[in-house]
Amino acid sequence: MALFMVVLVLLFILALSICTALLRWNELKFSKKGLPPGTMGWPIFGETTEFLKQGPNFMKNQRARYGSFFKSHILGCPTAVSMDPELNRYILMNEAKGLVPGYPQSMLDILGKCNIAAVHGSTHKQMRGALLALISPTMIKQQLLPKIDEFMRNFVSDWDNKIIDIQEKTKQMAFLSSLNQIASVESTSIAQEFMPEFFKLVLGTLSLPIDLPGTNYRRGLKARKIILTILKQLIEKRRGNQESHKDMLAYLMSKDDNNRYKLSDDEIIDQIITILYSGYETVSTTSMMAVKYLHDHPSILEELRKEHMALREKKRPEDPIEWNDLKPMKFTRAVIFETSRLATIVNGVLRKTTEEMELNGFVVPKGWRIYVYTREINYDPFIYPDPLAFNPWRWMDKSLESQSSFLIFGGGTRQCPGKELGIAEISTFLHYFITRYRWEEIGGEKLMKFPRVEAPNGLNIRVSSY
Image (cartoon, rainbow, N blue to C red; front, side):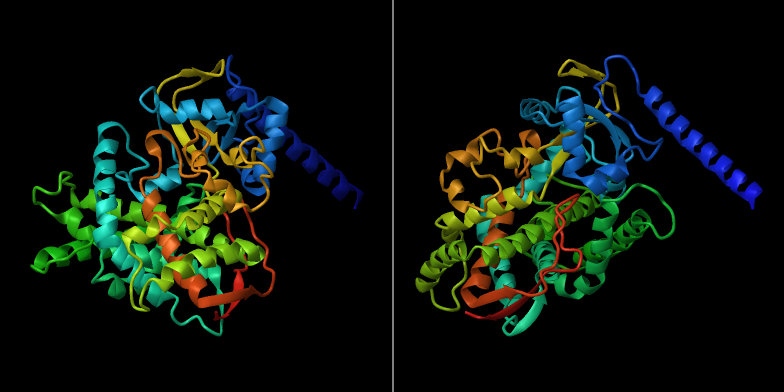
């Protein structure tokens, strides 16, 4: 027994020594003169576990120790983290000066090499131009909004006297609405196979790129292959018949002179995945959290309902929400912005250095990621007085939306091109939901705010007619 205890102690000491040596070796590996201060954690894994588990507290602790610009090793990459608002704006506005998108390898692998977040320079200009043409004000007004209105009206039509998981419902809503805009006629027939694979794809992009059985990354890669097959078959089917379609896929496949941005099939497929992916997270989560915040703040719900009831009174029951109805929805827009700010749907953006550069007096080597961490700006009391309060009225001052600190929808050359489309979708959903129903939460499920906003056990509400 005594011998066993001695061996156990020796093994513990050996393991401790190896761990200490590995940590020390990793720190020495990234101890080049001039680098930002900070810690790098374990080889390969770095400080990813601490980053994902502790979230904002990890960032605050590192800033307290090392300042607003520090080094770390997260999501598989050596990374310089910027929590400096002025430096963040510089990084976002200067992509041409050695800074390009630096998203994690898992995201690049699963979303595709033609994904707008992965390309830069002239390719980014081409892909962004094609995307902007799809979601221009004219397209929203003439083609997309009628589809959105019909979809939202039908989607919420049978919720009366039901207990629903609003998290699950808004996920389905965001995906199915986008799919309907992309391939209107075929969306119903492909949705059942497409949707579960898409949800696996999303989880895969938020994982470490470890290609082993059972990992979210492996599931995400498999889901991408299935989605590629579905979309290739859809494109081939469209080419095989002469039917006329008015949707995003028809525009992307068009060869006439009205389409300035001719894309290959691979580019079209990655563009479709990009549209689905980028709109899904923001629309679904903002819609869910708006329902949550409105439930918790009855006076704000009443003000919002007043705006929508006034609009409804001018229409017949069957009349749709139209383009000219969106602009007067000033309080609705304010609720959406305040929800995005307080919930912090997006915590920051990643850039990558294409050459060694100096930032804030420190050297950032070529190939490093720069994490532009914008979360703290949302809670700055100098910009947003009483920042933890849900107060949509602060956004009724239009100047707040135009300030340089407004980074809810990104910034610089990479500001979210689908901002107005997303606002139109959420506004239309809220219109039909709050004018038809009242609701109460049941269960009091816990919400997680990092690395993504979610209710791990769902967010159940009891719905009844208004």
